[in-house]
Structures are given as structure tokens and as C-alpha cells.
Image 1 (tube, rainbow, N blue to C red):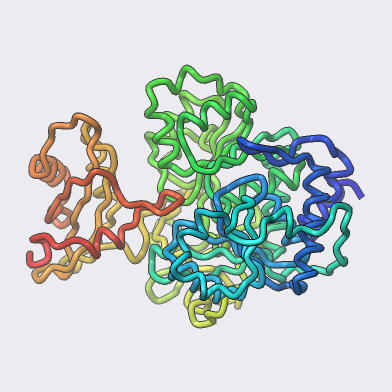
Image 2: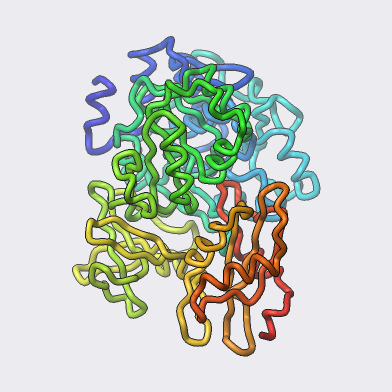
Length: 516
């Protein structure tokens, strides 16, 4: 069966698809980084050796293997090799604290742990708590060197049978809202994503976000399933991204908004030949309409913004190049995705009314690993008994069916009985010509219950003071919206995929607004 035929089936596995790609385009580069590359034939053979070695070590169908390392060809190939063994991949963030990493390893129950020297050094103080077998992807002394651990060349693993609801991977939440939760995404969810068809066989995709992020995987997996080439960057650097795009004649990229901003701000951006680009994507964090417009104007190819959650449920897509008048929205629900808005009483609200976003589709998590209570909290059931995933985001649909996000529900500020959406205030602040970025949070207030406080990063050589900017902003806001305080910061704290860590700002604030 050809790859094209396989991808029309209701269900299949990525490991099987890669095997067929190896037959159809054996010598085409699949994975590329600054040091090495693998063709589809070589990738397929590596996956067999990896799967055989995992089975040798007792990794059975649906068992977990974890990876925590810098992105590389070895990392990318290991991810696929775990799948061929029938295993569940748990990609972990090297930026996590040692205690958090140990907690995630214990929670997922990984039998084998793939890491590199940087991660091993970070875990040195707690290494005795790691029970999984350690394998060093970079050949260092972090564990058994990968080349020594792999099964011999020509090895073939035992065949495995994978069901649609079996775990494909466990993605741990960033912890921006508390202790990371293990989000179990099934094979059926990933199968739906790789069949979307937005990454053709000709795709050369820049992979510049970490492989432990769902943001990355929704770009990386379809590129390989469809026979494209993935160019892996160990970390994002704007200049290197542009140079590699030019060198490899990149056609596709998934970037988070802060990366787009850093690229577009470069004085030499327009000197790079990016004419090979067909489509660019963004997700994971708010994408300012003005920045989208700049990307459309100066960067060849289309631009699609996706809105959704790692947990799955309903997703929206904004084809920005087709709807330049809707750049303030996140688009319409994708085909097969049902998105509704509900109120505080869990009742659906009519079109034009604000509510919490809930969604349902073929791409939904099984649940949070070992946390059935948290899973239940994330679910909403319609009157028909259908399961939806709650996003915690507040939004409104316009008359054309485009969704505008207001804020995270937990970030909404209730001051003196009035609802204040931080995004409204942030939109005003960034209109100031000397402001680079802003975040507004609600802090406790003796007088109002909560009151808004802004944290603002200025552009280089800016002269405006905090008091001047606060007065300028408040003059443009309604009486109930006005800022109680404004703090100038060098930069806003962000997660690995560019989300502003508002909890950190809120928790660290010790200013006068607390008693206002």
C-alpha cells in the first residue's frame, strides 16, 4: 500500500507510514541538523534498531520511554523508534527543575531515559533517584552511549499492534498554572493531525521550537509522515533561522509569536531570500494583529494561525493571507471541529455573547496521566452527552463565525464587581510608540477585590517613564479599567514556547496596589 493510500485510511500508525516512505523515497533527506542528516532509508533502519533495543530492555507495547535533550537528528529519530516498538514517548523539557524532571519521570513510569550531557549535569544532584536505564543521545557519559546501546544493524523488532486510543505520547504541561500535568495524546489524535495535508512531500520545514513541545510536534510529525524534510535547530536564533531558511530553501515553518517578532525586528530581515516559503504557521500564544500584518507584507508565502490546546478538543485556524480583515481573530473552527461557548452555569451562550471556549473533535486527549480528577475538571458534556475539552479561554464569535479571544478565564480581573479583560488593556499600552510588549495581571486590592497592574518592556532607547506611561494609558481607558500600577521590566518572563508567565508576575508583585 502506498503512502498516499495509507493516509486516506481512518487509522494507521506513523511508524508504518515512515516505513513506506523509506520504500518510496529512500534517499531523500528526512532529518537534518547542523552536524548530520538521515535519509528515509537510514531513518527506517534506525527505528528498527531502536525498537529492537527497547524490546530487548523490556519495553512492551504501551510502555513509556522518556527523552530529555536538545533537539538533534538523534532525538528526532529516537522519537520515531520508540513508536515503532509500540512505546509511548514522554518528551521532557530540559529547562525544568531537577525536582520537576524527577517527578515527571516517576509519573510517566519510563523504563528507558534518553538524555544528553547538559541534562545529566543538571540532574547530577538527584541522579540517584532515576531508576530508568539512561542512554546518552550525544554519546557522552550521561548514560550508555547511543551507538553502543542500539541493536546491531539489520535488526528487526517484534511486530506490535497499536489501537487508536493507545498512548502516542505524554506531553507535560508547562506548569504555568501549577504542577505540570501529563497530557496523554492517543494515536488517533496524531493520526488526524498528520492527515490534514498542509505539509506536502516537497516541504522543507524549519523546526526551531523544542521537540518536547506540542507546538513543534504538530509541524514535525506531518512533515515526516508526508515525506518532507525537517531541519532541526538545537535552539532558536533569529539570524541562524534566516540563514538556514535561505540555505535549505525552506518552504514551511511553525513559529511562536515572540519568534516572529524577533525576526521581523531584525534590520537585515529584508536582505534574506525567503522566496521559497509556501506557508508559515503560528500557535501557542497571542499573536498581535499588527505583527501578523507585518509578516504578511514582508515575508513571502501564506500565514496560518492555529488556536487550540495540547489537550486537544476544538481548534480554529485563521488563514491570515485570505482574511486580512480578521487578523484580530484566531479564525474559524477547523473542519470536523465543534467549538462552543459556555457561561458560568455551564450553559451554552448564543452567538455574539462572551463565554468560555469548549471544543470537540477527533483530536482529543485520553486524559491527564494518573490524574482522573483533573481530567474531569477539563471536560464539559453537552446536553446530548458529547464530551468536550474546556480551554479556560474566554472568547466571542462574530457574525462570520470567527473567534476573538478575550483572555484566559483565570486571568480575567473582577474589580469592584466589573469584569476587566487584561488583553483590552494590553492592546492600549502597546499602542504607545516606545512600548515593546506588555502584560496586565490582577492583584489583590483591599478596596476593589482585584485591581489591574501592568508590566511593560520598552523598546531600546525609550525615554518614557513608568508614571508617564501609566497616565497616558489611563487617559485612554474607561474608569473601571484604569491601571493601579505600572512596572517597567527588561523583558517579560516566558515559557519555552513564548507564553507570558503571568503567574510569576502576579506572585512576585509587592507594590502599592495591594492595599489600594
